[in-house]
Length: 99
Image 1 (tube, helix red, strand yellow):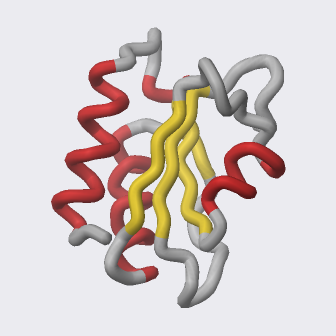
Image 2 (image 1 turned 180 degrees about the horizontal axis):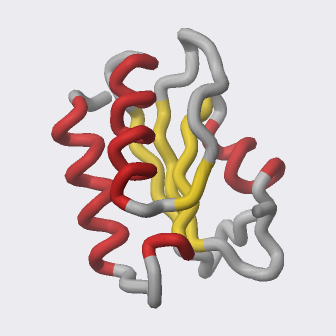
């Protein structure tokens, strides 16, 4: 689990390491079952796709990190989930992902 700084730093470092033409190529979201959300709902390629996730200590921290990354220019929705929504994920959008 992580506090806001740890979760944000981990995901930001992953994004920076895997540069894309634009931050809009990245999608950020929160989930309680992050693997189901990534690989089933968003259709992210598990092997070979660019994706990362990090658990947060609380749903409030997960939402704060999501809002921070959205403000930096990543694509994604805001809100959703419930008190069990404690993971933040990012992935690069491709022709096979949704979105």
